[in-house]
Length: 156
Image (cartoon, rainbow, N blue to C red; front, side, top):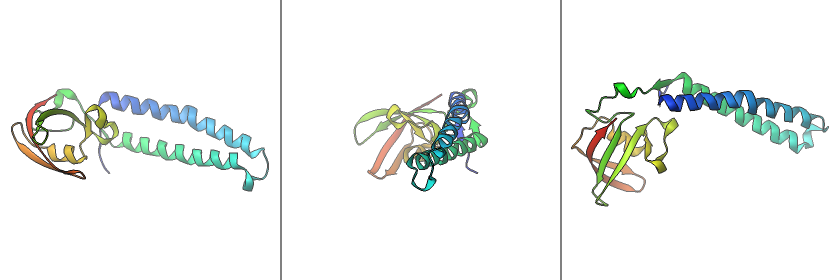
């Protein structure tokens, strides 16, 4: 099974979301399915079909969240080693192509938010950075081409 790296905050948020899906969304859609059944012929009942589709989507999302939590490894900031880039680190990079510094936090895929500088350990940049040390230069192959970064700093 694939390990899912989560911060304590990310794990708590996912547990809250799972609880909401199980205690609010699931019962709500079950209720709507019951109401739609009362409309009669199920073969031409669009309300019933829509509710059943939503139920399938909710159940799939619940299963996904449960799978993530089951295989979660919570990142403890106190145990992060900053000798090399790892999940949980904040990394400052010098982008040679654009002559600028960029900063990323490396997270698990469940918590990635690239627009806010949080990238996944399985993203092209995250994967290329893992295990490298401050001062090293790396090349990252992305769908947009190859980018060269120098690792300026690794922080918690």
